Image (tube, rainbow, N blue to C red):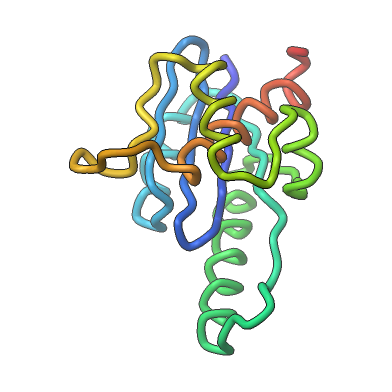
Length: 149
């Protein structure tokens, strides 16, 4: 069985894994890398990692920290032999007809995965766009990197 991983590396990003009918989703945090390893153990895994860069007006320290985390993600994937593709937001969003409106990614994720909880924490009152986008990136990996179209 193949595990399809989607990672939105932003400050409010998330990580998702689709394995058969099972979907696992976590807020982005380097500590959650362990979850990826546990769920991909003894399976083939591929990953769609959102290709992002510095944002205008972002401070030097936050840009440095973001770049460091982005590199750590890639290093983690390489160290554990998880093939990955850097996917621009424009490319994966076009594949799902997601607009720039954050609610658009939530709506598409809920349509494709109606039973999945998109709330960031148990106390959250509304669905989170970072969680939805990680899930859509995992689905993008399944459709483009796994032969299921």
